[in-house]
Length: 194
Image (cartoon, rainbow, N blue to C red):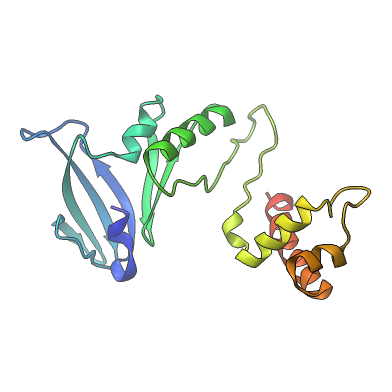
């Protein structure tokens, strides 16, 4: 399904799947693509509604399914979407530890699993969680942050000054400060506006 959302295929906006297998032991899954056409031979078109088209495919029970793995923990998947070749799965868990367990299990079975958003429901007890989307940082900004952190730039007293961290990265102190400021602005935006 995620593969169907690559390139000009559009976004997968809705997903449904059978909870039982057919006579051949396969599970049917359907998804809706908005304004696009997936390039996949395993799909059959089921219906079309204006700019949206519903496609169906079958998979064997042995073929891994992210949604089924999440649901083995006892938490139904509330939303599944695919865009740009990535599958986005939403489920509700009682606490961050459960989320960690589910994500760890998924990472053991599937490649490229990342926690993209963690939201605390209003009125819930516990810590004040904030989602930080590290993908907003450029590779260079991550490198600068990591180097500054590892060298003690953020400690008090400082383990290293801007010139020392910049020298370790083989960049000028002003370039170091520019990358660091841009990265901090993105990270603080996620924390302050959450």
